[in-house]
Length: 108
Image (tube, rainbow, N blue to C red; front, side):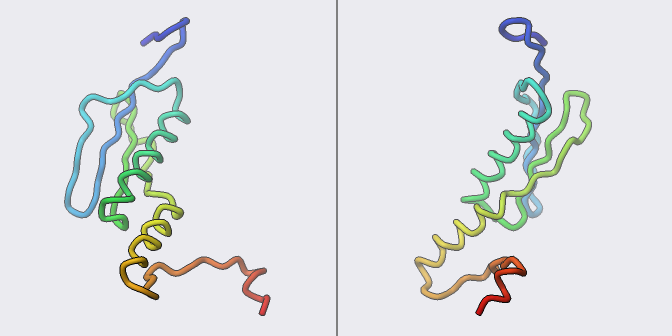
């Protein structure tokens, strides 16, 4: 498919999986390359990960021929953002462990 000034684009599909639920993207969205499609998949995961069951959400990115290119989970930053919002309602409760770099853990 051509778009604009001779740029070739491909259609990619973004299926959503969380828990026992599944939404299959039947329309797809045009992107110039795989990198752009994967970035878009991460944006979808991060946006939905704010509101949905964060722990189980996965975005499956497929090519036009049905090949699975990636399974993307919400970024860790979104989980911490969600925990911060939840923590506002319940003082002192954070369920997600904080990763500490080994060099920093030696500092007392």
